[in-house]
Structure formats: structure tokens, C-alpha cells
Amino acid sequence: MKSLCGMLAVLAFTACSNDNDEATGSDNHIWHVTLTASMGDATNRALSADGNTITAKFAASEVVKVVKSNGSVVGTLTPQTVGTKTTTLTGTIEGSFSNNEVLTLRYHSETANYDNQVGTLPGISANQDNAEATLTITDATSMTFASNSVTLAPQQSITKFTFKDESSDINVKTFGIAATGLVQSIAANGTETVGAVTGTLATAKTEVYVALRNTSTSQQTYSFYIQDNTGNWYTGTKKATLANGKNYTASVTLTKLPTLNGSSEVGTVGVIGGLPAIVVDLDETIGKKAVALMNTGALCPEHYGKYYTFANQSSDLKDDWVVPTQAELNALVLKTNAWVTQNGVAGRQYTIVTGKTLFFPAAGYYNNFAQDWTDVTTLGYYWSLTSADTNYGYCYSFSSGSNNTNSHDKADGFTVRPFHALPTE
Image 1 (tube, rainbow, N blue to C red):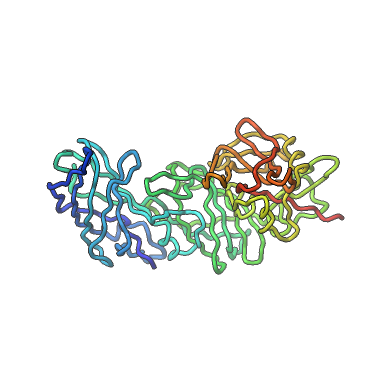
Image 2: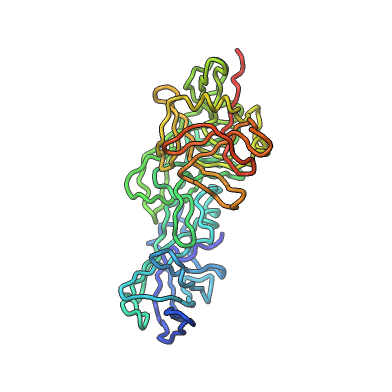
């Protein structure tokens, strides 16, 4: 297992050089820092399972970043010895600082990502390591700190989930978890992206380990979408308070989704063609269709899924799922809908029948010209199958104040919400 760097580690500052190099042409200074880092007492570590404590040791490739309040990284500290509870950290801090300024010591993987987990304890250490501490500068001229030691506190909880269908355990193959304030990823400067967390296991298991970071410390309702090793889908919710730095064991009882067919009533939620969907009566001409509850490539309704150009929008669809036509999307747009935040994710929600809704997350799009993501969390763009001309295709687009279909450059990357015909009776 890759080591969990610095989880609940105590850093004791043994030396901070008073000699500094002034950066040419600026007020910045470069401070050479040497620290002694020792792990906290093992009994204080939350990262354990079944009585087996995860060994928290520094690895050669790991670093502790020093970050200012504006998010800029002003230095990195690296371990000089690895594989032990105690090490020496050395590095430099560069910048212009003031008395009483608070710096953050941040350890996490370069791509700290809580999404796309593999549901295993060893897998958690690969991309979810995350711990932080703060430093207060008391004298900026000599880079003196208020305390000689700090504690790097873990910024996530770890839960061992067992999912049940009434009384029997479910062999989990994929999972999607959504809740208000759930964090998908953390950038190097500490910026957090809020959204659903998903995972796919190489081998189905009845016990699933998931690292979760929630920005809220109050009780939350967690929404689950689970697929088992035979393709069945289950859904349900559970209320919980998950504190960062803690580990939990949770048993969640879910409801198995039924199979949809031509006799399924409008508003019925079930499975058709291997995906969860809801039956929608679009209009008198088109009639009833099954509309997927989630985007192509997503594992729960709040997940963005994959992005496609117009030319390849159907590439991942199977089992008779299709991209909707402009006419089908136009019919959907006329249904009762509203801009909402569902489990912390912004988007547009359609009321199919009382108590049954269909959610489209505002996933933005990939701008091919700018080679960058655009309008994520504020706008939604979903391809239709209908072409406008050589360069433009029709799409469903929405914001907090608009909801319509229009045309857009075929080269840009949009999300896709597939439709499925209901078999005739």
C-alpha cells in the first residue's frame, strides 16, 4: 500500500534559518527551512479498519506544500528519510510575509480526487491522502512562528459500507454517492470542487471502503446508487454525520429498482437496457419514453459523466439507448421544471409526476477553441441527435433563468442524456 503521508502527523520545528536570499527585483525573500516531522500517537489515528491501523509514513515522492491565504503555494517541504514515523523535512518558503499571517501546511496527492474510487482500503491511499495544519508567523523579519509544532489533521473520513437489499448483502460493482457539500477533488492551492463521488471496483465486493470529504459538519442525507455484479441497480438514502479524521462502519438498506416495460406508468423509476430511468410522456406525437436518470458515463444523477463532440455522442451507448432528437428535447423542455440545487449540485429539475423528478446537472461544456472547461455549475449543454448544418448541431441548453434548445458548434464537448423506447405490449 502506498503510504499515507503525514496523516495526524506532528511537525516539530527544529530549525528555520534566519539567513534569507532576497529575490531580485522584488520584496520577496527566500527562507531556507528545516523541520523535524514525527507521527502522532497511533491511538489518535482515525485511519484504521477492523483493528488494523494504516501505517502513516512519509514516502520519497511526497511533499508538504506551504500555502498562503490567497491559495498561492509559496514553498514545498520534502522528507529526507522515508518509511519511518519520524523524518526531517527541508525546503524553502519564498514570498513577502507579514506578522500574524497564517500559512497552511497542506499534504495531499498531486491530484487529490475523491471521485472514481476503487472501493478498497489500499486504493484510498493512492489519490485521497489529504491532511492540513496552520502556521502563524509572529515575526516576518526572522520567519518566527507562534508554535514550534503543528498537527497535520486528516481532511476526510473513511467509511466501510455494507449495502443490503432487505436482508442480503449486495455484491457492489459500482457506486455513486451524493450529498450537500460533498467534495469531489481538491486542487494544489486548496480549491475544492463539490459534487458526487463515484467508484468502480475491479472485483465486486460486499464491503466497500470510501474516503469522503464533506464541507459540512452537520448531519447530511447521503443518496446512493449501487449496481451489483449482475447488473441490478439499487437506490436509497441514509442520514449521517461524517467528521473528517474519523472512520466509520455503515450498513445501508437499499431498494432494488424494477424492470421497465411498455406497461410501466408515467413517473415509474426502474431499469431498462442496463440503466436506471424514469418513464416520461413527452407529448401526444412522441408518447412515452424511458429517460435515463443519469448522463452517459455517470454513476448517479448528480454526476456529470463524460463529454462528447457531436460526432461521437453515441459512441458509449448500448442496449438500444439513443441520443434524443431535437423534437424529443423540445417536448421535455415544455414540462414543469425549475433551477435547483440537488445534493449540492446545481442544475435543472423536471417534475414528471408528484414526487418523481428528473435532474440534469449544470455540467457546462468543453470549449474546443479555448481548450478549456466553460460554464461548469452555471449552464447545462446536452447534445441532441439532430444536425443543424455541417458545423452546428442542436442541443438542449439551460441556465438558472433559461431552458430551451438551440444550435452549437459540433466540435465542443457536451454531456449526453440518453433516451430508450419502451417495448410494445
